[in-house]
Length: 77
Image (cartoon, rainbow, N blue to C red; front, side, top):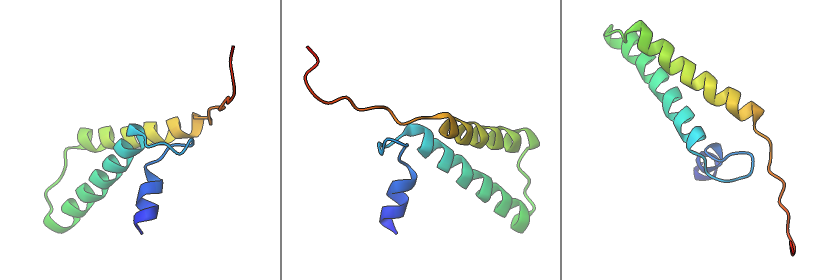
């Protein structure tokens, strides 16, 4: 399980990325806001829900546009 959680926050080059961490954080916030609304009937403001959902969408869209960087090894003289 720890391997999966570490792999989720890596970008396509295998490096840790703040975008992935932020997207996971906002997905967790959306799930938490849904659970709080369902079980306590304390509603999150509608604009906050849309803001979180938009940030998740932006993170996923950015990941879909990202390409692996080409690694050039060797002497570049």
